[in-house]
Image 1 (spheres, rainbow, N blue to C red):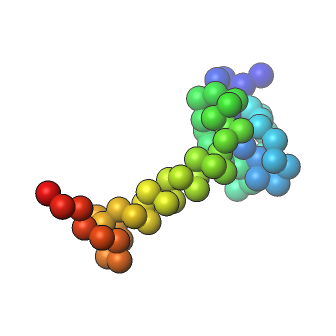
Image 2 (tube, rainbow, N blue to C red):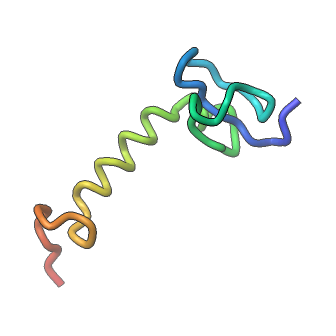
Amino acid sequence: MSDGKWYFNTKTGQVEGEEGARAADRLGPYDTKEQAARALEIAAERTKAWDDDPDWNDDAPASEE
């Protein structure tokens, strides 16, 4: 049984607990199974946000203050 942390296995596409696959094959940890099931979507959202962050991307437009 998991300790409450959940992972998304990138090889199988399944959500698993702590006892799952090796770390290189999974994303997480997430607090809920539902979050782990959305791991690829969450990663894409975070990547887009980082790509658009002018503090981390010289090509992104600077925000007007």
